[in-house]
Amino acid sequence: MPYTLKENRTERMKAAIAALVDDIKVKGDLNYTVCEIVGQLCLRDGGISYTSTSNWIDGVHGAEAELRRRLLGPYEDLKKEQNGDVESFVELLATMK
Image (tube, rainbow, N blue to C red; front, top):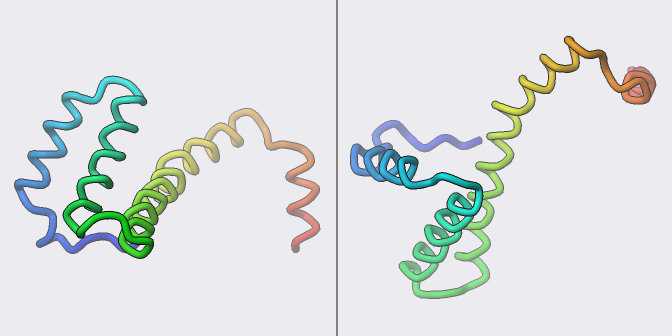
């Protein structure tokens, strides 16, 4: 993931995130918040254009991929070690060596 530079992580941005986190209680709240942010970014950029809208949506997909890689992946690896792997996965992965 192309992390934003530390100097771009402003105190205003951090405060806004903290305020949003206090208000987000359920998955629907998060969905609304992300959609509203992307919508407002598109409006700021002059409305809907394929390039601008696609770029903002790609940013959301990139965040999803990073969350899965950094948070869910290690958790799933832990559970695989605790509970055993999916047998067919072991067999399939062995064919890749």
